[in-house]
Image (cartoon, rainbow, N blue to C red):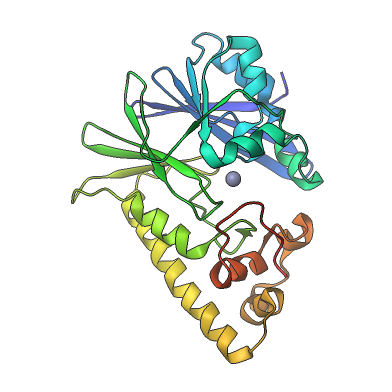
Length: 289
Ligand SMILES: [Zn+2]
């Protein structure tokens, strides 16, 4: 065991396994989801032994990955060693990245661990349907957090469930350096139910499950649109081409950007400003300047 606390919760046909690991810098939390015979995402390598133990009585027969980051893909080889050569599906454009990434920056390794690379991935596309036995998952292209990110959506008994991976965040100003603000707003709206009055449950990797998904995602998209307008106006007024300088102008009243300092710029307000002015639509991305 790696000493995680594991919290299980059920949401319609989905079971969430949330792993909480104490670190010197607070609790690192990440979750995976189980529905029918399928596991969605695998967490990072620090939770590997706890994940294997949690799945041991009913191993998955298929794994679907939402995107390439280490806290989602890190344990694929470990699970295959324990549970056999189950098919593992990854977004087509992320397959090569997952196969070749064994190191991440130190601060990411501290929280999520270095991933164990894996090559036997089956590429999948937006529009793919995975019939898990308990629900049919629809793969929905949802870039914004990172290009080619995919969310998995199912409607069961009149309720829509969205496994949002890392698309939705409650702290949008702590933006990831592979972000695109306009794509993110469009992706959030793409997950809203087409039918009026249908509830939406948001099942994210990090943070709590949200039963008020319709207002939550709609409000988040509206906030992004408004803030993007503010960034563009400030850029026009200042004449500065530096995302970092503009972030200072716009957000210095919030105090120092601590995540910027800790992450070497990968998670930062400057990355948010860049996500508006120069949205990232291809990988690899550079750091904001
Ligand atoms: Zn991510």
